[in-house]
Image (cartoon, rainbow, N blue to C red):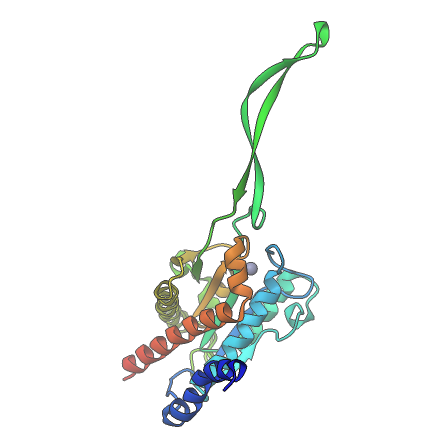
Length: 299
Ligand SMILES: [Zn+2]
């Protein structure tokens, strides 16, 4: 065996092992989840943030499509709905707000059981590294009446080191607005109900609580999986502003910041096949745990 063939053999070995042992013995997982809506952040005219060589809208789309495929492999019965599968603003909307509305309406119309928003982060500083100016003192320049005092600066290259994933959920306890998005359809009841009646409002509030608890549960699992695979994670965060799309979906919903494009290494990771697969694997493992805990709670 020459060296090239030998190399090919070693590279293919895991694949051979997988096809011959894993696949036939792995039964499809059962789940109470029917539909999952995956929302790749930004798109089209809205690139989101950017790193040294990549744009957020492309990174979120690549991860989202892989995520949908991986969920389908683990749970063949789950229907995946994407808010976009190409580089467009969802619904071909002409502005960001219209695009957000389209995302939420699609999720609600699809009667999703879970809404997953995929994003990549920025710490607001230039990607990679940047020059920072520090005031070190003053000096006098010019002569006579033109003499003036000027600042003296030193310049330093700073590496952009902020890294890590974060998971956001809508802060439900602050406002009842999510309750308004919970229609009788989302509550899984075919009986027509007057949504303005006190009974309906109470039921909507109960569902809002349940959705909040489930969002928090799934979000915590996702964050834990990031940590387990050696990533830095800011944990589960609650936000009451700026994540309108989570508020507007009548189902458990999370927004996953997969990492910082403004950090050189993390940008490479999020654009690499290995990095994207790892992020996807983390979310799918969390979904398996989430699905199993829903199964346990069923009467
Ligand atoms: Zn974003």
